[in-house]
Length: 149
Image (tube, rainbow, N blue to C red; front, side):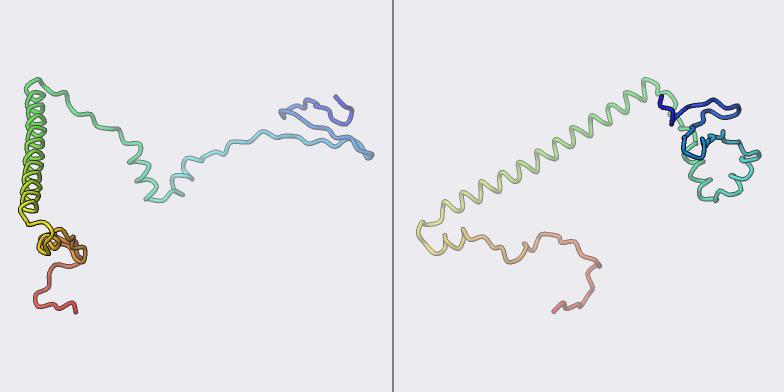
């Protein structure tokens, strides 16, 4: 250690640093923190009601579901299985319907004479407005007699 810096033990402190200078060594004592008495009463009264509610909600024990018997497990399994089967059937019906519509549209386009204005108009895509059957989200319900123009 250099003579300018020494660690000296002092009673009641954890450590002391000494710095030498021309006037003599100066000492800095690191004091131990004292515990305040009655802190529980002060903090509870100082806390707001909302904070107490949040802390109570966070500290609340989680409730556990009672054990399930075998009959209930089988019933829940059957409900889930029927839901999955129904979802697949609904998906397959929608997919089949769309496939049939695409095939019918392609067949109708193939039936039109080639090189005619009728076929050209049938192959055009209307991008000006959405189809009339499409539901659009709006802010208000339909107002009778309302003219937006």
